[in-house]
Length: 467
Image (cartoon, rainbow, N blue to C red):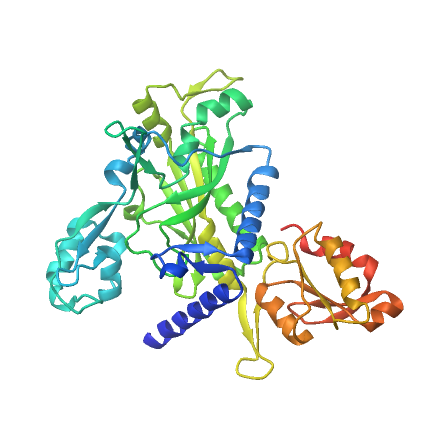
């Protein structure tokens, strides 16, 4: 077990090292010594993130006639979070080491220390286990066995809004994007002529003051979500729940994620959030084990009814044909962009011919997700080859991101692009001047073929666009 864990940790370290080496992800505030659990997405990482979000938006908004988009505010009226239940119940169980003052999330601590399933323990059960097994528990940082009693800790970040001292108001950085959709339900129905069933999709930043923030970008305090709330008539929610689970799984496979890297797990009754009548997690087999990638929840009419109560506004839907009034039920597929980013990197990462002179690291990214679509390499820096390469670069860069590289041997230039996940490399050599053809190399197979220079643009358009 320990050997398997160490191997998984090494695998994650390799991916983290590649991410920094090739400009995908940098540690946050690096020149100041870093800020715990913050990350900056570099030139290639930000391009991959944008491609992921564009692919999701196309599949969940543009390709559907029953979904519209929204971009709601990060700062919402504080009563929104009272209505949603976040102020009272959005908490994690925590305790401190009295010796070194380190703070731990109790359920995760017990999972690591004792192997118990922390997700099934409430606060009372956690306290009971910690008391019963106290001789087996020690601080992983200092080794002490003296802890404070576990208590609940709210995960929302507080801030103040107001220009004058004494007149400021406590507001929260949103812990999820969903509530911005619910409070705009009536606005969208009134202005966009949508009819139930319909969905509202949103991509945006959320913030949670996670104590256990770890495993690279899997769990961070600042993260980005792609969420949709699908409003349907009560009684039809099971049908739509099953539809969206299937739709989401097929979309992930369409991104190139291997089927055996994914599994669908239904929540046990004791795991369900208080608003949910059913939840399914699409889990991915990360280097550190299976973890939630995408949650699909049947939220009933809880959120709309809560906002009706707290705002005193009528959020009922009037069916224009039957004239029936009702509060819609909601099915919510909620996906973290950062987790999907890590899943895609993990699934695409491989090392070929390890330990030999032919070793190469490859990211087998779906061409539509790859941050660079093609690398352009003049064989030499003379004989007019760079000029041909520059002209091709200018032509292609108007259509999609491409790299132009003159430095190092052709082999090293290939390997750099392999680590970026670039699907194709184009070499301009002396034969190019003779017959106007170039060498086109495919990333995964490394097969090469000659192709006419004037056909390169159309070939790439056909092979790198679309999921």
